[in-house]
Amino acid sequence: MNLIVFHLNLFDLVVSQASMPPSASKAQTEIGRNITKILNTILDSRYDKRVRPDYAGPPVEVGVTMYIISISSVSEVQMDFTADFYFRQGWRDKRLSFKPRPGIDALYVGAEVSDKIWVPDTFFANEKWAQFHQATTFNTFIRIRANGDVLRSIRLTVTSSCPMNLQYFPMDRQLCTIEIES
Figure 1 (tube, helix red, strand yellow):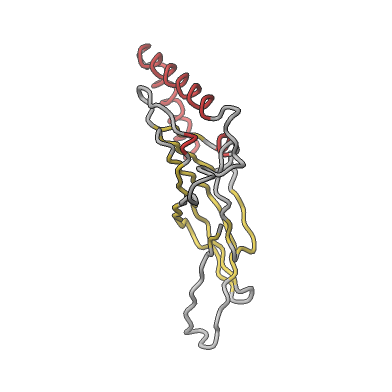
Figure 2 (cartoon, helix red, strand yellow):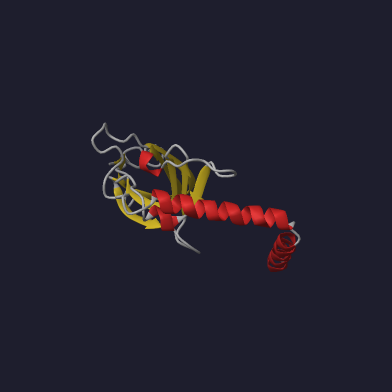
């Protein structure tokens, strides 16, 4: 049943794209060209991802949020837990700022651009194991605003250590954390 619904939705998408007025299609093509120009300009040979933004200035402030999808296991024996989540980081890199153009005040790109820009050296201090999700492609999202604000979102599954006090088992309570450092 789900397979049939998928095919119908795909057919609806093809029909709606084909019935788009020529002027809308032309506008989309122009926006696509503008996005390409912007990316080529901000990621030219002068941009060095090895150097943090505003290198001579103060440290880069990086905001972090996590959207937990699930906690799939808690092991009293291994003293760890596994969580699946979206890890989001935000910072400003003025080198990525650009002049807005009609229909473009931000760029929404994937993993291919993530490999070309500076990203914070964030890690999970109590990590035992981690996995980047990559079905059907790397689960990475980048938004770059015209002022250089960057939002990076990646999907991860992380197993972290959680030292547990089992003195009152089975009536115990545990506090497990994911320690984020840079």
